[in-house]
Image (tube, rainbow, N blue to C red; front, side, top):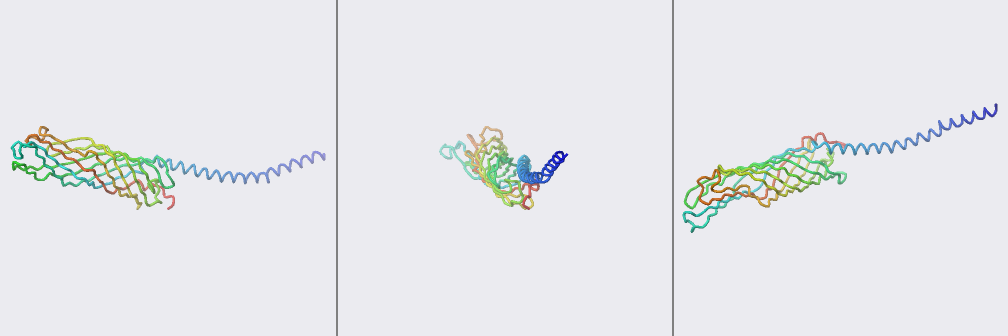
Length: 279
């Protein structure tokens, strides 16, 4: 009987230890484990959230307008049929006075983080530029005068690799300023008309860009880019081309553009959905 009672006491003692001290140890161990787990879970959530934001490309969409600064050089070469210049070819050169207005839309995909507030991104967009100008009155050696209107329309799809810092790099409203610098390629399709004669051609050039952004209700950006044309010829026609009837014998008309410098402003309408983690 005493042995049975002693055994029962031992079992009760083991049970109390297992449900008090040991369980307290387990509870504190679980608390430590939970603290680590919470941190890991937060990190996992943050990484998943960041990954999700990268996938939500619409957060980076922008629309804007800009002025393009470039000169058009007009050249008309023709034969001196009348012998006004000793039978040599005659060249008329002038710079066309023109104003260029452009519109753009685009977005970017974050490729990877370069720091807490910086990232590498692939930028893409669609750009349209329109310009209207005129040769003004051109007086021929024979005394005849002509004037041609010149219209220029360009569509381009710029593709760039960019460094981004600030709100745009992390889609976060709490970082009110941002900066972007990038370089890439500028494939473009150009259609032009000189008088009643038209041309279409493709252009392919390197492009550099820089942007400064600020958040004020939405993300606003001041944008600048430089398109480094190696050959800026945008129009060429000869005397026997359609629309050039009656042009002087041997006539060749060309219009070339200087390398454009564009500056403008853009707005990111979906930036209203950015994070506000520190607001």
